[in-house]
Length: 608
Image (cartoon, rainbow, N blue to C red):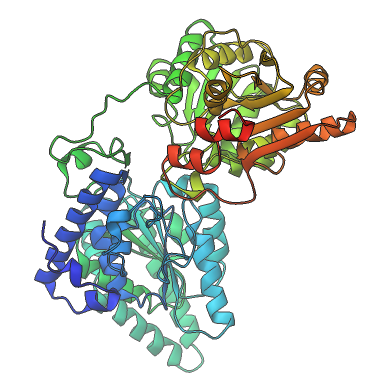
């Protein structure tokens, strides 16, 4: 595909110069470039295809980067990247050393903040907006948030704070699923069209100015007129949650009509109180496969554009966890499954269809999910909360307060534990071990293989412990036929060197030590650490701990502390991720970078 217009766009100023025909061509080319790149590199497809016209309209109506535009999560920022000077680098999307799939300030002045997690845009944008006012700077800040992100409580905390203050702050709601306000009948449709016209709002501004100017009674008349208008609006539109928060509500408007959106964005800038502009878009717009099945085209691996995504993927740890839970639930009516808008991602599709009354998708609300799970467990149920490692971070306080203090037996299935690859810094599951292992009463398992994961889930479903079962993204590596039901397993060697590890990279440690004299120790239940393990490790002159996690607070440091307390005098080396965020790269490349591949492990152990 030729990119005659897109290739010439070096920034938003160039977009402002285009006529209607050129704008339509630009949007077609943006979709083409997104499809071309994502089909090769993988990435977020449906959400980006649906936000093309919206992004173009935003950059025409506002003055980025003076006006900060923040896309919540960043799943829909590809068009933004393409028209802010990154067309020439777009082929490197989600590759090592290339541009990322989310907003990153280190990448462009047009990306004001780091994004990657949901429901943060309102708080971030409002903070930037207030900073501009306090510093007497020009410009505003705009939060672009999807209806899915509104299920996250942080978004409403932001709405509550913004609504209390009079400001020209603007939130754009990208609605591709639900209708926020219930419009009833022909009168509602007519008044919606009226309210979306520029003349209507300018008449409002002029009328208010006139009424206020009347001596003595002007302000009272203006307030009375506003009250009458609000009463009529409530009769027609019922209740609008945004107006209840104190926002001026504009829309809904067609999210694929650039001119209409541009007009409403400019009207919103005229108001002296915060506004919500409600935009209706079609997820996957322009690609039939994605339009018909947006969930399957949210995040995709490389695929054939003509044939669409191949849904038949290899079995993964997520599938094993979900299927195991589904089988156990057939005979145990107390087992419940909880997800935070990740039913398919966490492998719970079968459970959701078979046990509807015991399946709970709480939306993007991890804090609520943990508290809810604690309530279920307190009531005698056996709740399993399946969640990505990087998203469980948001539920830390609830794990401490609502689960651990009373030792409530909630079960956490922590998916995407360890290095995850191309999603980059915001999605790497490298922190859960460190923060979970500091919480009293928490038990942590890290199975390496499918069969081990199945048996661990079955065991914890039958006990009363608060626990976390963590497992990586993707497939198992070279399974080993061995009983891993004990807290740890020792593969005896003949030297005084020992390699210790857990989880996915045990396969590589085992392969590296198999034909050597080095003893390999696999931790199955990685925390708490048994005294007998410390005694056994004390017999080695050299211990090397390989940990696919952040070093600070990890299991390696816990064992180092215990060995030090016991008077251990040997050499102790930790190979872990030390004080940095893991950037975008393939999993294999990242494992090699941090010394977790077979060759690197052999070199570290001196057996190569």
